[in-house]
Image (cartoon, rainbow, N blue to C red; front, top):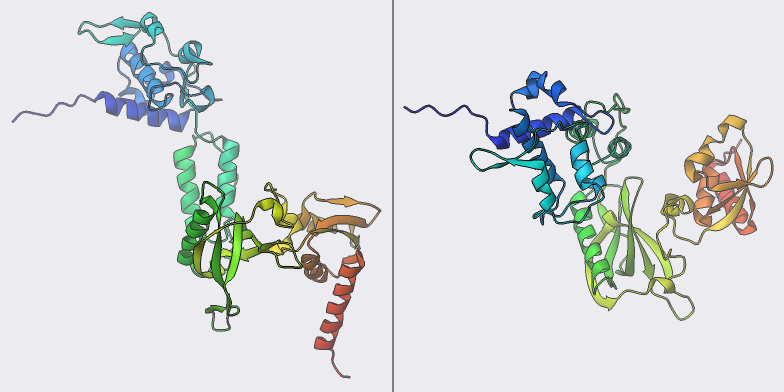
Length: 389
């Protein structure tokens, strides 16, 4: 019986060397051929210096070009080393299929094959798809997810580190534990609704169409039930992830005495969702709707209240180190106008609830209509909790 050859194929050699470079190199930690030959993990896949050079150039040309053999921009290269950068730096977009300059770097072997000259390949490394700063952001996003268990978070983070980093990456989040959050009731419904809303938003070459749905809420038996007997008609504009939930920011149609207004709905609470034939309203016609998306939207619409934000003056009464709560809710989006007086831009409806939550350290001093609404809420609470002596 004829024995199978134990010769390692070029494909396997290339793949193992690629795995090694992904694991043990990055821009700040390039490697030399001599170092690789001393490592039993990869040495057996390297071959002679000329075949090794040829293999590294082949890897570079495969991973640094698109499907049309056009060179990618340098920041999108995966295999980087001095010789390749000398020859191809700043040539992004060029076609390398018939590169005459390649003849200067090659010799023809006895069997007619072309191989790269045995010039040393220096400062070789794998350029990872994500920077370590971006990896930190990905891992942070996983740990802060409100819909994953600790086991699932840990498993995803382990895959990110294994497949997207080198051994030089330091996991700053090792040992972090997440806290279980309330789970969105029906993820299947949520995903279906997201598909329908995206379809409506992209319809008619991005002009978009209106949607119709019935809005629901949970009852005491933990079941979703309709929050009224009508179907809502909304022009959809933005899908926003906030606090572990997904929201649609849209616009209601106007009436005879009122212009179209911005509205916000939780997407997982929608039912009987469908795309209508009617074209959605132009953004500029919807009052309160941001024409271009602003990442600070949630800071002025606390808990996704949709009424128009106003400048609100707050008197803060707490110890100097206790202003953290203000940063937690508004970030840097507040300004001081006195020793303990600050101004924030916020939804008045949201401010009523927020100011009551922090009533031990916050007093709304302006505008008067917000202050009066808080006073009315305090009176109702006083009546609710009043006890007879």
